Length: 184
Image (cartoon, rainbow, N blue to C red):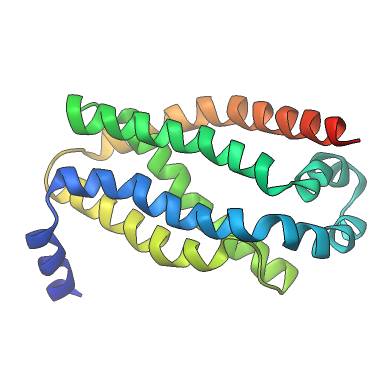
């Protein structure tokens, strides 16, 4: 493992490391964009039947997701990631980058958890494992080992995520619900 880290450290400068975030995100989301509609149409009704009432209402619009609508959501998230990367790369402002990186890292486990819970492939699980998980771990390691961020920065990133995430999720659910209603 040490040799692998030394290799990457020697060949990836910090600027490249930062810009790998939007690149790995797009690889991950290409898998989701290409599979979400077909998978949702095939598996969604059965999964929704198994959910309790409150969860059915919350997730129903997600299972009616079409490729176009999902790509719009991806564009919004991608814009946030690029903004966070710009702030980090050009202004050495890492708090938003860390907040989004934390979410990216945690998102791996939602994909793995969904696949295990449902006992099936779920859109995004393959690219959550590679490249999202290795990139996230390496980015944490590299930013910390280079002294670019410290533990207090990591905690501030978590705090920013904790404040922004509920608001963003609410907007996403409302947007998906509006999109589902307009399809009718």
